[in-house]
Structures are given as C-alpha cells and as structure tokens.
Image (tube, rainbow, N blue to C red; front, top):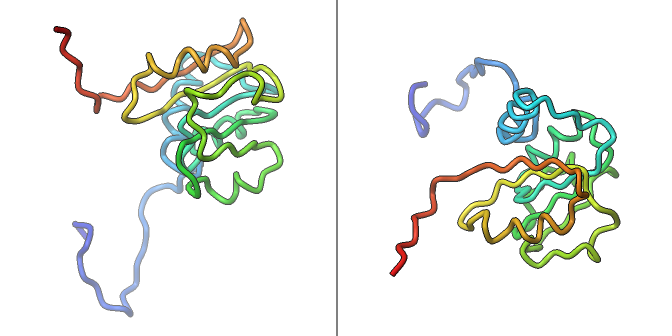
Length: 152
C-alpha cells in the first residue's frame, strides 16, 4: 500500500512494517530525544505535561522514572486509557494552563514539558514558572504554526 485511503479487499493479508511505538503517541519520541540530548534525569521527579493531548510526553516521563505527572490540557477525552488509569498521573482536562495557580497543585514541580498549539509560550510561561520549584527543568517545544504579529 502506497497511499492512505487505498482500497483493499476485506480478506487481504496485512503486515505492518517497522518497529512498534514505545509511547502512546509519537510525542514521546520528541521528549525522549530532548531527555537524551540534555541528559535530563527524571527518576523520582514530580512533573507536568502541559498540552498533554494523548499523553506521549506523559508516557515518556513515566517510562523515564517520573514519580508523578500532571497531564494538563484544555481539551478532554484525549488522554490514552493506559495513562488515565495510572495512579501516578493526575488528569487535569479542560484546564487552561494560563489560569493554573500553585494553589491548584498538590506540590511544586521538578520538571515540566510544554507542547501547546495556537498559543505563544510567552502567554503560558508565567503560569508554568509559578508552579515550578526554583531549581526545576523545563523543556518547551516550539511550534512554527503561529504567525508573527506585526507591531504598529
């Protein structure tokens, strides 16, 4: 099969090539690359996956030893069941990170990842910084889908 949407018969023998994904989504691969490149140790940390969506980053954090991960997203119903049912994951759906305060968290965080679309990091960083410990690490994915705003 060369293209998505190619019609095949119901009795076709289908074989998937390539390796299986180690995380619930490809997002986990992105964070894994950053963890390796920056030599980030997540063993025992309290972390947040901001813009969690399906939870690829959350899954990667847990597989790298995070003790607890807050999965924060404005959407709902997207987080993989494997993570939703994991006692180490605090699901914070329908939550805009811009309005999260330290009072809403059980503790300050050691680590956070940010992968948000359609909003500038400048708008989310103040809230994120307020929930981090002073010595925390932060990994931010920079999306290029936002158009620059012209100053007048």
